[in-house]
Amino acid sequence: MSEQHWIDLRSDTVTQPCEAMRAAMAAADVGDDVYGDDPTVNRLQEHAAELFGYEAGMFAPSGTQTNLIALMTHCGRGDEYLVGQEAHTYKYEGGGAAVLGSIQPQPIANQADGSIALADIEAYIKPDDMHFARTRLLALENTIGGRVLSQEYVAAATTLAHVRGLATHLDGARICNAAVKQNIGLREAVLGFDTVSVCLSKGLGAPVGSVLLGPKAFIEQGKRWRKMLGGGMRQAGVIAAAALYALEHNVQRLADDHDNAAALARGLAEIDALDVGTPQTNIFWLDVPAAACEPLRKALLDAGIRATVGPRMRLVTHLDISRADVDRTVGAFKSFFKNWQA
Ligand SMILES: *Cc1c(COP(=O)(O)O)cnc(C)c1O
Image 1 (cartoon, rainbow, N blue to C red):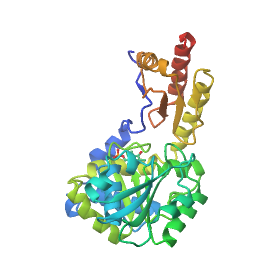
Image 2 (tube, rainbow, N blue to C red):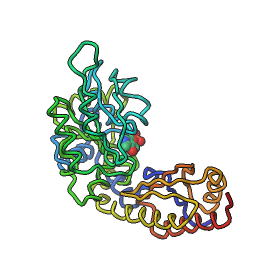
Image 3 (cartoon, helix red, strand yellow):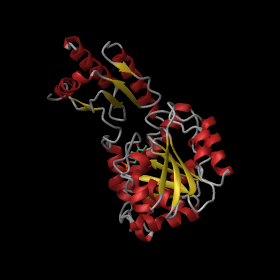
Image 4 (cartoon, helix red, strand yellow):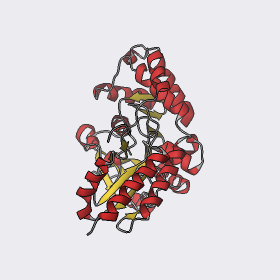
């Protein structure tokens, strides 16, 4: 590997800020955001709230933190939230809701399409009885493992939650992918959710940061948790400028990532040894023979390709993956499997 750049298919978090994004960061007006003084952070929060149709927004260092702030603001000690077994907030955030929020998660099996069955939601809402935690919130995730929740499902699930007196939160780390895939607006994609967390550092390509959106009073309350969790930032306009740039320039282009994922999956599906899923967005999964994993990982590295290789492996396309990179990756897989014997 010499001049060729690395092809990194591990995640859409690995993108590098482009020149124009860096220029926006360098030129950002800044202030102390803990005092609410950073004009660029304020502009980002207002812009994001407007884009998604909420009253207010809060910028924070990570999606883990915006999700936790949301859970801690919706639920108090001894309250419970309903969440998918596969959901990021439940499975991949270190148990923060329970550890730091004293909130009991009620995990529920995800269906094959990523949804939580309406009958399960209904069945897991606890009666008002001193034996039970108080069920307060339904949290969904869209996209989830690259799958898009249908608008019909989202409407039905959030309506059910509201009718039963629960609040609704969306882990919308990749909600822009879901919106672009369905060819709907961002406001439409989040309909039914009282609050939403949006990652700016995934497919949108900002180096860092997420926004939490919701009612003004909710966001104000959430700022206390953000401070407690160590998320109060000072001249954060430098990174908010990148986030603004991402929201202004990188939403519609997510369609390219979806096309590239589809092309990559089609190419890999021509290899007999692999069982390749059909991507809906920029993330898809494939099955690799266990014995092939270690030599494949090495062969890919030798070809300048970083991937999380395993028997069930995930590939992710993003801003820094071109169609030529897709072709090079398919080529590297094919030349490995041409010589590989089980
Ligand atoms: C990445 C991600 C988050 C939060 O991630 P951070 O790395 O903490 O910014 C939350 N939910 C989902 C679904 C994610 O993919």
